[in-house]
Image 1 (cartoon, rainbow, N blue to C red):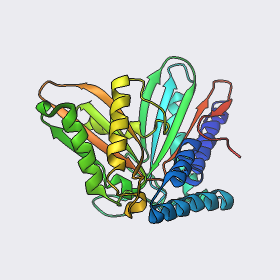
Image 2: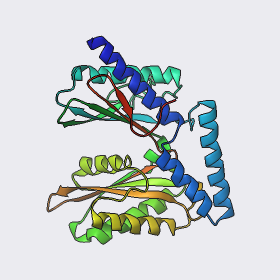
Image 3: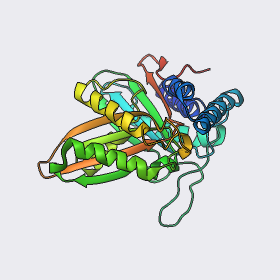
Image 4: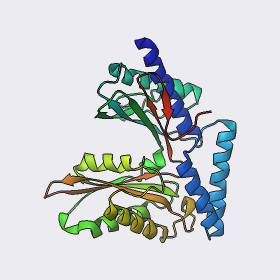
Length: 295
């Protein structure tokens, strides 16, 4: 019974990786379709039309959306009473190895000192697993495929506390201007504020998981997200950095309380191929897909 449940987790994780690599979640697809309809720049519309055609072909041919299938990151929320909890990590690793061959995925796990590629997208701390413990007996798995172009645009700054909220806004816009077309806009921008250096970047990347178009439950942050979205889209960077109205699909902000002497701010980019997929596994073996309807 334990082996069967472990296999169920592995198969579910494999399905999530495949879904993320091949099919964008509806919130992202709909945002890109709206951007295409509203884009005034001829070149910008052409780029968005190409993106939408890319999405269509990937789904039709059941192949990855992009040749860079990214670094695999899991966000795991588990109930304290979920059975075979000690088997989850090994099941995820097996799923990644299978996905590399079966999806297929480009091998993207390289030793930073020897430059040796593991060949199966696993290695030291890769795939990276973010754990969260909750009440109950369910297991929720979210996979994020993070491409190199968007990852290379991520920035962390230890700001002076005196710079305040206006300083945060200025920094975010400066990061977008500096990144230009490198993260393959239109992007989703995650902003993490507070905590410490590691916490801020963790929050910024976690913010990328929030649905596009969903308002922040904090009214002040919802207003700030809107202001940043409008400011970034007024830069004219546009789709793929070639000019236009849509540089960002959304801006998402998460925060943590900070030390009085520290003011860390992190900015994480996700390219237009915002490849994420999530599912919840119940104790009876039922699987509920949260971002996609599997075929």
